[in-house]
Structure formats: C-alpha cells, structure tokens
Amino acid sequence: MAVPVALIRQLCYPSGYRLPKLTRLEYKWKPAEAAKPYSVALARVNPTPMQGNLPNDEYRFFVGKYEKTWMASTCRWCGSLFHNVDGRKRHKDAKCKEKLTRLYARILPNKRCVACNAVTTREYWGLPFCSVVCENTWRFTEPPVFRSYLDREKKQLEAERLFREANAKVD
Image (cartoon, rainbow, N blue to C red):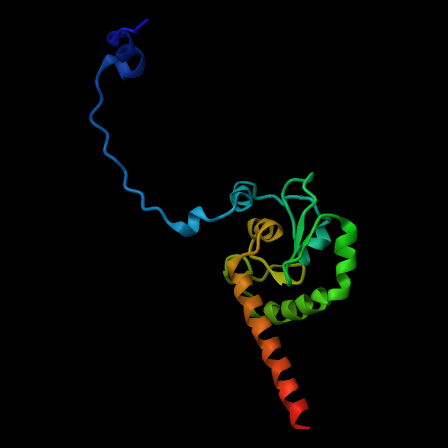
C-alpha cells in the first residue's frame, strides 16, 4: 500500500509548503578524531569522575576499562596485560611502579596536563590534569602527550644503561 504524496507533504513540510533546497555542509574527516577510542568520547560526555573496573589508586599505574565487568588492565610502563588483581600485585617485581613514579616526578613541575597538554595547576595521582574530563581520559586510555613523555624517558634510561655498559667494558 502506497502512502499518498499529498499526505506526506502535509505531515513532513510545515503547512504543506515545500522548503528551500538544503545546502550540503562540508565536513573534512580527520583521522585523529576517528581514532579516538569509545572511552574518550564517553569521558567527554560525562564530566564527572567515572569509576571503571579498577580501584581508584591503581589508575596511576594501570590503564583500566570503563566497564566494571571487564577485568583487563594494562601496565602504563611495559604494556603488560592483566586479567585479575593477583597479576597486578605480582607485577610489582618488574619495578614499573618505581620507573613511573620517577617519570611522574619529572612531569609534575612542567604544569602541563598529561592528557591535553594545557597549562594547569590541578594535580591528581601526582600528575597535572586540567579537568575531570582529562582524568577520565587518563583512566581508560594512554594519551599521546603522556606517550611522548614515556618514550623520551625510556630512551633516556636505555642511553644511561648503554653508557654504564660501555664504561664497565673499559674498566
């Protein structure tokens, strides 16, 4: 059964009048926006602190999930994946927490948010954050700004290790 066109016009167009032709909006797709995970979008919509699958103090060293039922978490330093509390506790032997704490002590005096690189005076988990939105982003993702700090720190530690090995061979 076909619906009469006159009925559609009366229901869809204001007072049955045809509207002027719509202009097409130009939108340029940006890969950086499309690559953001769902959790970042969720953090931007919800500006209150979100509680995910980890205790609040563990987000300092681990990337969690926004769903409480997902038990996966990732170490921020080495990228190891853990599916339970025991795995995260046993990971203390890897000394990732000491390395991250040392890195955080170097980042804090910069007063630049580790999620968006904005100037800030706020501090949470020993790191500068400009807003709750950035804290939520930190809980569930690894922001590119922090990734650059982390890569720099790892290169510096590797250079120090190579320097010590070279001096040990000379002696």
